[in-house]
Amino acid sequence: MSPGDVSSILSWWSEAGVDTLVAETPRDWLRQAPPPAPASVAEAPAAFAEAEEELPGQLDLFQAWLAGTDRLAFASPNAPRICPSGDPASGLMILADMPTGEDCAAGVLMAGEAGRLFDRMLAAIGRDRNSIYLAALSCLRSPDGRLSGEPARRCADLARHQIGLVAPRALLLLGDSCARAMLGLGVAQARGRWHEVATHAGPIKALVTMKPDFLLSQPAHKARAWADLQMLIEEVRP
Image (cartoon, helix red, strand yellow):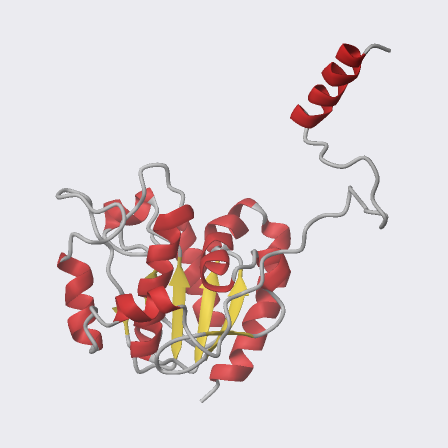
């Protein structure tokens, strides 16, 4: 084999990502990387702490800021906003990811058939919309109905601030996007156990379950959602 042939072969392997010929320690190349660790509950990230200094420190003022600011992700002059509702003193805060198209048309979170299932879920734990505090990571719907990347991080910072202002006894996170934004875990990894969300008011206990619209399309998961609600009942029972 000529030096030119050897050089050509080595260049091909380099472009393919091979950067070593011999390794001392065996490596399992098929092993999946572990999920990212959730943020520490001991302290909020520095960027969040700095941003929080600019936000209203009272819940009513923060709600008014949410309703009018142009600094929110997906904000535009004609975009409908679905702001938080319910009783912040109820002890139970429920957080969704963002309004659906049906929510935007109705002007409330959890509208339509998913909303009717949500109401039944609340009734099962002895609550209704007046005895919870219901909010979303984003008051506005994204153009593609998804929440990820930098907008998700910005929304998570605002949610942490709002959760700290409400200071509920328990926080219920609905769906995968919400769980990933607040805990760094998907629903499959996060549900079935309690977590803590770091806020300026201290750590808040959080539980994860599936979104009502997911349960409508996958009714076999309703038993798992009921198990999550039973855990929640024990925490927020008067």
